[in-house]
Length: 180
Length: 179
Image: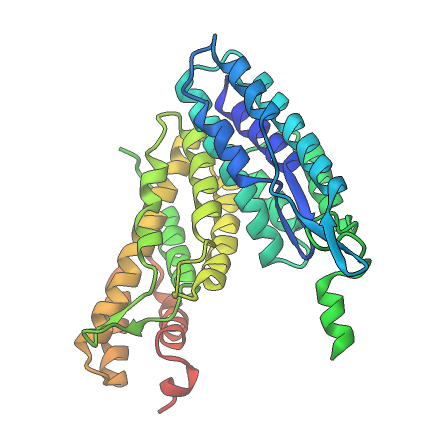
């Protein structure tokens, strides 16, 4: 696999792995991405089964929503996390096809770095899209339009589907502003 | 070995000083010496440019490495926001080099020199501050002497005052400078 393809595939999967949690944009589960990373050195024969196993055995950390006075597990959130994990696992499995172990390791390193770059970009800038466009340009990425669209949807996504924000319509920035 | 034209060298040197003034301001360490916090982040950048033989891959890797490491918070340093400014300016510089310069290998070499000068230049400013023992006029004299020597070789004499002022403002602050 050419380095430029490896890079754009890592970006594609990294942006898919991102979710909005309140004010922040973050990877759905860094530890789960690291888990996939840890499988990169396995043999071609063992790898697909190991990824399937990592998908099957994933148990997201339970989170709770408050209903009346009793906190109850947020099943919708758990289901979303599992679905996201299965999607990312399948994408990684496809991307690994035809890569040797060292290329897989580099690919997963990039995927992990990319998730952190997205997190940091959203923290640094109110509108992070120009930053990402500039970054993709200097990384020499061709056809970054889909990835930009994916990032734009994170900017626009105000669905609060992260922990503890399930039923809120305002972001924490706005909440603070309205208090003052 | 890559040969640079005089104009290119001038561009790289001036760009390196433009980047220096986005670094965290020098601070005194426990030995009462001036230093730049989180300097290690810069020290590691040249390695990223050597990671791949293919220069295009090396540039991509360097950019990604920079975007990942520079804004990352270091415990207690408080420099992450400052380094994000450096990142932004560095990306602009890489973009300009990529558009102006034809071969990826030539771009890589320009970046190697840029980061090298950024490291040397920021170290030099701290050395001059330490050697000046809190005497601002002495620091200014030494700084201008250093810049004059460099800039006369690359034909950038007309940039000397502007660059010296920018570095003085960055290193000791605009208020201190007027004293």
